[in-house]
Amino acid sequence: MKDHKDGFALQVEGGKVDWAAHSNDLGGLIFDQLAFDEAVGKVIEFAEKDGETLVIITTDHGNSNPGLFYADEANKKFDSLQRFKHSNTWLLAQLNQSFSEQKIREMIKENQGIEMKSEDIKSLLSHFKDIVPGQLYNEANLPFYEYGKILGKYTDVQWAGMNHTGDYVELTMFGPGSEQLKPFVKNYELHNFMLKAAEMPEHFLVSVGK
Image 1 (cartoon, helix red, strand yellow):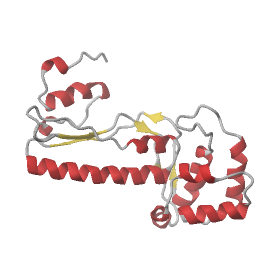
Image 2 (image 1 turned 180 degrees about the vertical axis):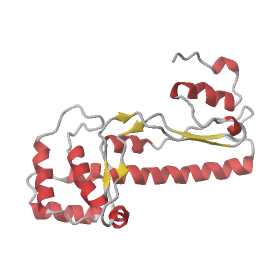
Image 3 (image 1 turned 90 degrees about the vertical axis):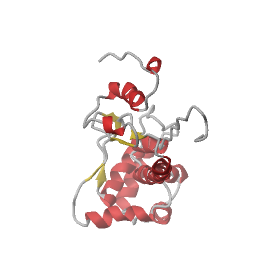
């Protein structure tokens, strides 16, 4: 693409970040964010050598507002994520209400490295029967919300909910045109702002109401 006479535009999305936030899936969110960071690293490496490429990193909205709430052994608890082999979505899809507590405990330990207490496993099992239908990205009606709350005891990460949130999100730029970036940009202004920074023709711009 770099040799095309008209240049190129490439969009790269860390799509699982959004899905994982909706399902309060901490492992799925963080590990996909790390994968996105690796992709950004390759893009910046290219842009530094090229010298004519504008890189824009942003998102369209906040989601579920996860936060690390400091408590005893907070660092140790959060570091337990390094032992995760699978996301909550994968793990919950493997579980069955007919499984014994011991089998579920072993599955969680094997796949997420957590020694889960008996009362938490019982709570999880009870919520397999009590799912609110229609949750986004939860066609299988898995107890994402309950499991996210349970894991909060072991990771110190808690969630505000399962839907989009109105918090500020990151917008950063690198390369020619990035000097136009202001400290704050309204969401509805971003489309035209990016096109102007990339020196796109005027006919690509759209009229956007507040």
